[in-house]
Length: 70
Image 1 (cartoon, rainbow, N blue to C red):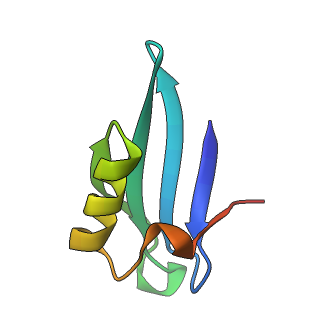
Image 2 (image 1 turned 180 degrees about the vertical axis):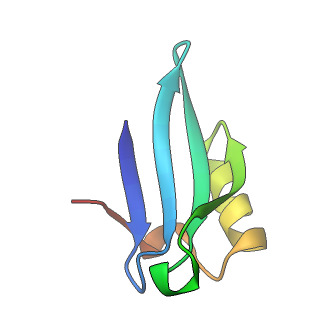
Image 3 (image 1 turned 90 degrees about the vertical axis):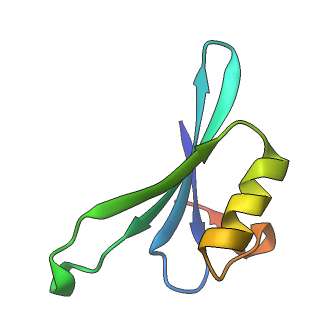
């Protein structure tokens, strides 16, 4: 499983998983520890085009704002 994270704050993450031969992209928002930590799954899609639409509607990010997590 690989993961992509936003370059601005690191709280927006997209994980990429291969399930039954298909890629699934899961968008997650992580809360800072000062606010109790945790995460909120905002959506899961099956294509990059759907991921771009999900990012556009649910976050202030675009695909170009994501970087591979270390």
